Image (cartoon, rainbow, N blue to C red; front, top):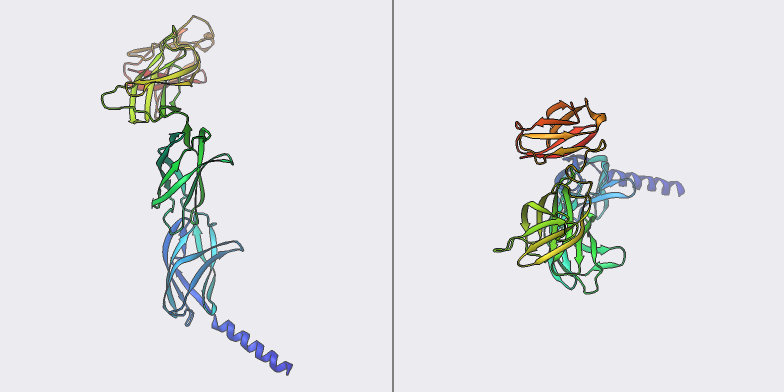
Length: 399
């Protein structure tokens, strides 16, 4: 009797094994992270059951797996599936199994390869600042994101572990754009907030310092240096909150000063580029003799009045010739027209110099022949140049 039961058990096991089909091909058999693709799967006769609920799993090890988004069984040997490969899926080979109400219907080992793809990330928040007590819409933009892949998307603005800006609504516009309505509370902590988004497809994505809470409806919030390659000029990107930069009929004037309207010469912006009502870029040329140290920023127009950002820019060293000493290296006049004079240390005489444009190309070379070496700049195009000598790099402007 035991022999009969054992024979029957072995026969049933063999039947179960032969009943499970084999996946013979997957086309395509590879795909990149963070992509969606349609695959065609073929199997041995009787592998798939038309009309039944069919599931496809892609498995790598014990913890890495993803499933087909939709599956369509075409015959007992053929089916197609739409596969979403998560951005977080590890690269490499995956086993593929097809299951239905009878269990595993077909299997293939190391049949699909996940390739490296573009990693999703958040790139911007517009508008990225607000005064306390303000309710506003913000637009969140991402690259290679999948906000609309059928999963709920959550967002949060956080400052540390306990301070959050309340989110009233989240509206996913497309795979790369979210429109959210937020309320900055009257007791909200001021300063920078990180933005974090979450959905089942992209997981957690964070953009540090994405949003700024201020204490005033109109003011300068952030000043970011763009070009600080020399101590005689600088270009700054200035971001305000509730400001009216470029408002029709109102001229926006920008300057840097150490002590407002004092004997210290202010650096008036030589050019102002209005990007929008809350953002501008300004280039400053410091007058000869301007001292080093912290400079405050001032923005003035007839709508906002005078706005100030203290300690907005730190200037290294003095501009222009102050006295003749062996320790000084000075380029003058700067900006230069047809000639630039190089005032150098005695130890640098007879050493070489290079003039480099902003593409990195050396456009002129020469030798420092004396304490003051004249350099002809008449053949240079107007613009900004770097002068390399004595192991250091200095900036000058050719008018």
